[in-house]
Length: 110
Length: 114
Image (cartoon, rainbow over all chains, first blue to last red):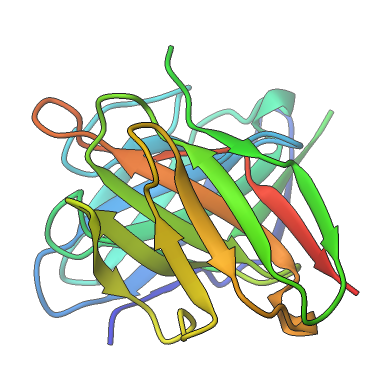
């Protein structure tokens, strides 16, 4: 069965430090991988998806099919990055249901 | 930028009562979804809806749940007889046809069953 894991429930880093939020997935096909972010009291927002290869708000994520990972990285954390981050996958197309990981709460310490 | 909206933002109900959660998807979108998030747990898929019928549903979406698109704009989730364990945040999402390829989420409705 398809599954997304995020090993860290909570992650605290100092402002200016590098951030890496880990994500691993299990799915036998060719999924689409996403990172969603939820800032305090706001809705879930798409941060980035693997096929677009964009860098949003300084975040990047590389899909490693060999390790089935899609870790989210940012070289220098900002206070406004504090939020809940969900790694997610969609089975074959964007129209399929999204399967979410449990989320990592990132706290950036000033 | 167009947004998915949901009403109410918070619903409190007694166990055994029926509730209807409402969503207005983005106007030109064709696919609609409901997800839920029990406090402290992950976001879980409930159901997807396309062309006026359910396209997929999860194990959670049992006979107590139903969805409807009663008109051209609303998409509703009905829970027939609520249980305590239905207390959760319910998110609606939609995605369009050609040219749009990500699911847009609503702000959620917090359902509290007493």
